[in-house]
Image (cartoon, rainbow, N blue to C red; front, side):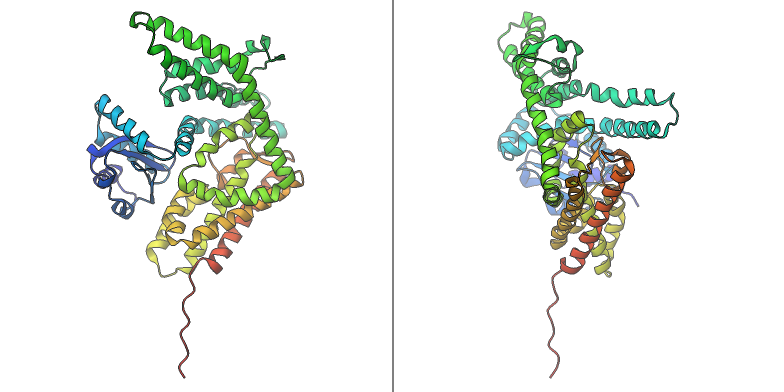
Length: 460
C-alpha cells in the first residue's frame, strides 16, 4: 500500500532536524533534495529505515538526497514544502552562502549546477522525442500524410528554440535575471546571424547550440551583476538590461558562437570516433561505470553532451550504451530474488522496484537492493558493461544505435530509438544489448554476488 505523502514528509522532516533545520527543498525524477542548516541534527539511519524511503545519499556536508522513486517524489516534495513553509529571504540567503562554502568540491558543485539547468527540460525533450519518432514511423509507412507535417512542427519547435530555455534556466540558476539570459541566448538561434561574419567565417543560426547558449547566459549574468553594482539606482532599470544584452550579445556573436561551435563539433567527432574505432571497449567502460555515476547523482551532468549530439546528429549514440547499466541492475536484482528465497522483505522490495528498473529508473534497485548487499552492485556493473559492449560492438560494424531524446531508458527507450540502419535493426541491437545485460547481470550475481558459506567438516 502506498504511503500518504503528507505522512512521509512529516516522518522525513522529523529525521532531518525538523522543518526549521531545512533551508532548501528541491527534487529530480526520483530524489528529494534537502539542504540543512545543522548536519548533526540529521538521523541518517532513521531516514533509511522509513517505509517508502529507498535510499539516502549524503551530498556534501549539509545536503542530502532522499530516494523516493518516480511519481512519489513529486507529491512528497510538495508536502515537505508545505510543512517547511516560507523562510525569511535574508536568513535563507545567508545559510545557502555558508552551505556553498562548506559543501562538496568545486567540480561536483559546478556539475550539479549545470545539471540543474537541463533537468527541467527533460519532460519536453521526452515528449518531443516520442512525437518525432512517431512522425518518422508515419512517414516511412506512408500513413496519414496530412498529419505528419503538423507532427513534425510540434516535435521540432522545442528543439529549434531550446537555446532560449537553456539561457533562461542558466541565468536563473546562477543568480541573474532569467529573461535576460534567455534574450542573449536567443541570439544563437536567430536566423539573422547568417549575415554576421566572425573570424572570417559566416555564422549559421544555431551554431554552438546549447553550449553557446549556456556560455552566453553565463556571460550575461556576470555582466548584469557587474552593472548592478555600478549603475545608479535611478538608471538601473534602463541601463543594466541594455548593457547586459548589448555586451553579452556582441561577445556571443563575435566569439562564443564560434568557439562553442568548435567544441560541439569536437564532441560529435569524438563520439563517432569512439564508437567506430573502440566501440566494444567504449561500451564496456560506459555501461560498467554508469551505475556509480547514478549512485553519486552525477549522471545528470551528461545531459549537455546528449543534447549537443541530438542537435548535431538527430540522436545521441551515448544514451543506449549507458542504458545498459540499468539492464545489468535488473539482472542482478532477479538473481538476488532467486538466491534469497527466505528474505521476504528484500523480495518485496525487488517486486515493487523491478517495474521501474525495467523502464530505466535504477535508483530504487540500487538503494533498495544491490548497494546495501555490496557484491550485487559490482556484478550489476558487470552486466551493464556486457550490454554496453554488445551495443558498442555493432557500432564498430557501422550499425549506430541512438536516442532522439534523453530521460527514459530500459524498455521505455524503444519509442525514442533511431539509427542509420532502419528501426528494425536499431531495435534488435538495442534489445540484444538489454538481454545481454540481463543475462550477465543475473549470472554474475548468482555465481559471485554472495559470500561463500564456510564448509562444515564431515564427522570422522
